[in-house]
Structure formats: C-alpha cells, structure tokens
Image 1 (tube, helix red, strand yellow):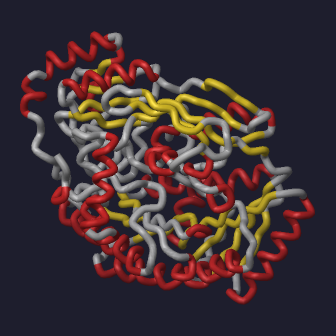
Image 2 (image 1 turned 60 degrees about the vertical axis):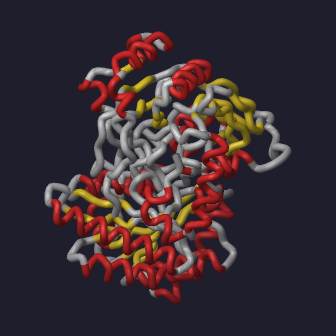
Image 3 (image 1 turned 135 degrees about the vertical axis):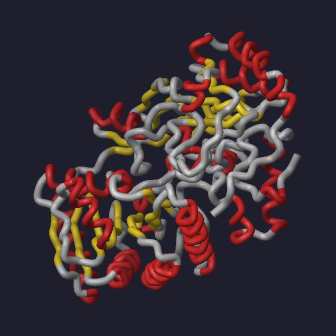
Length: 477
C-alpha cells in the first residue's frame, strides 16, 4: 500500500545521539529513558508489523510537567517525537524514524477524578480503554467507546485515532464521549481545553485535536463522559445464505429507525475461525452472520428483538438465535472481540479500515471479494456493520515479498473502492504511514495543503509524528 519511505533523517541529531540521551536523562530518571538496543526494539513498530524502524530512544514520563520538559528539550534540539500509547495502532501511527524519540504515556495511567453527579471521569491518557469502565462499573456506569483491543489499547491512542468499537453505533466514537483535554504543545506549553461542561465555549478545538494522530501535541489528561449502564442487554445471532443478504438486512434495520447497541458482521471464513477459538455457538452452515445487540428493560429488549426478527424475514435468515444467559452473551462477544487474534493464529493479515454509506454495503462486499480474487488472496470480513465501518482482513504470507506486495495493492484497491462509493479511507484506525499516499484519493492537493497549514499552527517545525498522514510529495518543512 505504501513503502516505508521517510524524509531525510537529521544527521546532526544522529551524530550527537549520546549527548541528546544524556540531556533526556537529566530530565527524567535513567530507568525512564530507554536507549539500549534491546530496549528500543520494543518500540520499533506497532501492530502494523510489516514496517519496523529503531528509534533514537524511548522516554516514559509519568506527569504532564515531565512531558512538557521533554518536548521543550526536543524542540530546542530539533528532535522528532512520536507519541505512543500501547502500540496497538494498525496503520503505523506509532512507527518511529531513526532520528526520533518515542514518547510513551503507558506509565501515565492514574485516575484523577470520578464525578458521578456530573457523569465524568478525569484520567491520565495512559490508562487502558477497559480500565475506565472497570473503575466505574461497580457504581453502575461505563465508558462507551470499546475498540476490539480495549484490554490493551490506551485512551491516548483512542484520542489520536478517534477510535470507536462495536457499541459506537448507539453511543458514538471517542470524540462524542470526551469533554476536556490537557495537551502539551511542542514548545512545552500546557493547554487545557474544555472540562466537565457539556459544550465548551468557542471553537470546537476538541473536535480538531481528537483524531489528529499525535501531530498537534501530546494529550496527557482527558475528562470523558461516563454513562449509566442500561438495565439489561442481549445479543442475537442471525445467519444468512449470502453476505449480500446480511448487508441488505443491516441497511433495513437502520432504515427502520431502530438503533441497536451494536450490529457486527462476520463472513464464513471469519465465523469458522472465531468459533474454533471462542466456542460461542456460531452457526457454521451460513455464509454470513450478524451479531445484533439491544438493551433496556426486559420488555423493551423482547420488543426490539421481535421487531428486528420481523425486519430480517424478507432477507431469508437461515437461523435466528437469541442469547439466553449472561454466559452465552459473553461467549458471543468473546468470539467477536477476539476475531483479529483468532485470524492471526492461522495467517498473516492486512486489516483494512474503510467506511461506506450503509446502502452500499451489499455491492461493496461483492466487489471486495472480486478484488481479492483478482489478486489471488483470501479475505475474511469482520466489521462494525451498523455504521458502515469495514474491516476486511486480507490474508497473505508475510514471508513472501511478492505476496506482501500483492496484499498492499489489494488493500489499496479496497480503500479506493470505499472512497468511490462515497465513504472514506479510515473509520477508526487512522491514516498513519499505511494510508498516507492514498490521501490524494480522498482529498485534492488544495484540501491537504489546508490541513497541513493547521498542523503547522500547532507544530511549526513539524517535529510531531512528522512522516504520517500526509503524502511525502506534499510534505512541509
């Protein structure tokens, strides 16, 4: 899809590496500056493991003030900085260059304030996604965004990529659930935006920063919205004889005005792999499966599931099964949440992340199959069907350079298809290095130049996550 081309490394920085590392250790304790080769290797890549590059060093601050000192030092010494949460990025968003340092926030994981009256939680951004819900769940609350990697991924990465998850259909993605941020700019200035209020005054700077992929500053704290958990929730499984029928059913459910908590899609290859892993009772004699979850009182759940079953009838579902217990519901979701890992047990895969209008879902699924067949590659489709966020997993052999190249070209065509039908290149994984050269498919050169001007306002020297998002041919400084 793209090569790991980077801009010319800063030779002066490389030549003075030892001095620069000594300077960083003057700012932080020695054990929080990782400079040895084995230690740096842990930061050389993220979940998009096709690309690797050893950083100059990695630093692991524990407070906003320490982040400020590190960024001020890096600006003074012209050192590039790559922000990193847990390294679960699937687009190369946390990939370093050899003349950059990785600034990891994993040690910044404290809960600073829980305010049940105002329904907010203020936390450091190194906390895991699931960690927020775990803190507030004993009191009947939860944090809504739930990426599949929520056991490991940090709020910092979720903020950078505007992550979603299965339940974003009803509750929205990260930007819909954040009320305030504390961000450190490249010159070390600490800025607070928003707070506990429902709508901050002035321009929507939160909307600008969330999803900016670590190019504007390092977000160290966030105030997020916590929600009262529903009285109950229950998923149902619906199997279909074709992916097209399942896709059409999704569009019909949303078109009816019903908004389930989640509608998740799996095709036959994904069903079999996930069932073998999770033993969730997925039907193995269907071509496509929908997991549809609704919530509310018992009466409301029964009513919604009945209406959804009626909506599905014209699409001739091969079977409908409603979960009958908490254990069964957990098994159903374990299979879906473990899908990427389950596929990874049998094959290397390239995970796409395009979005499309829901009405285009049936035809796009057909075209994805045709594209992959043309490249002689298998595909497993697992995605958030309710909001049109596709995650085709293109299966390939990472040890075969020719097959890697085919997989990249195949993935590029899939994403170009998403744009062609009125969608976009990314729903929740970000652009990173993986999709940067495809940005001219989505935007005109003028569009991108305007976006780059905004980046320059926050980071005039382009030291933050520099080789990401924008095609190198358009690159600033």
